[in-house]
Length: 408
Image (tube, rainbow, N blue to C red):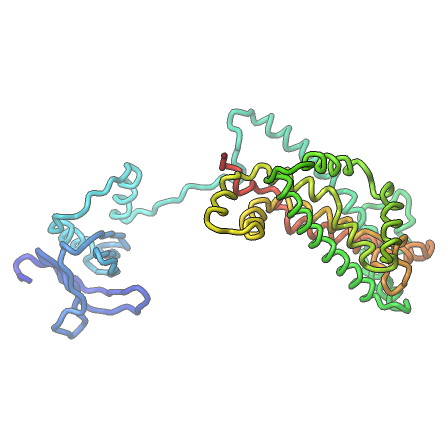
């Protein structure tokens, strides 16, 4: 390297994932080299023809940070006392630099960085208008209406939680306050004391409910999903008639089907067993209806491509169909959990050891005026699980299906 046309600067070199090295960078006409302090041999060295990119950020005064990226993706980061002079020298002799198209804003930003000016990031507005063609008054009116509806919808839940925290004297005050003046958790502690005095442990009621809810929901999901897959993507005699029967069943409430379900379970010998609640949950028509409607929007080309690749029917159902109808089966899970968790099962289960949590809490609520606070606490426990399931899954329920932009 000729001494006639070289530029030198002391500073540091940092390699990716390594510590900083102190030394001197020497740039000539054809290349540059970095020498460690007190060393005669270059620590790193490169020719300008090997360079792919070079960036410079001014740190203050003549000091700047220079990043050199070679064509083999080797990266050198220098902090040099005479960084501006070194950068200009190397840029001058780097004749075969790649041509990059930059916008005017990027060029102004680069020049500002070279001058050492502080670049202000654009401020993000707290509220961004999705419909700029609508007036501000229209936005305010819509938000006010939404706020009123939101208050009306959340008020029962707030009142329920507030009632569970009220002492006994505030529970009978008229007009009833929405929130207690002196909140207390005595209602919950009294509830657990009362449950602990039962000859069946509280945990037994809880495990019964969890088992029935989990098994019933999982079975409903699998059976409804497989049946909906067949009805949506395969043509067979009687398919439309069968779906019409399922749609008709949506009109009947649980009170109408209670007697037929009891007769069937009695004939099968399943009365006073968990299956008296689980099996009817498998056949709930709402899940089949939701899954079938979503699966009809799934492109048949996906299934045909998987069949050509050698995937079996069950593999297609589990790996392709179910992930693409996630909003449907998450919605179905909410309905199923809500129905099974809130069932008292008093008509088909008689053994106390097999009773559900809702039945046990209802017995406490029937204990008279003295247990009004415990009744409010029991209601909070009953509604908490369905609400928690909804809160955890609402974002995925509302998201668009993965196949929404694919058309046959």
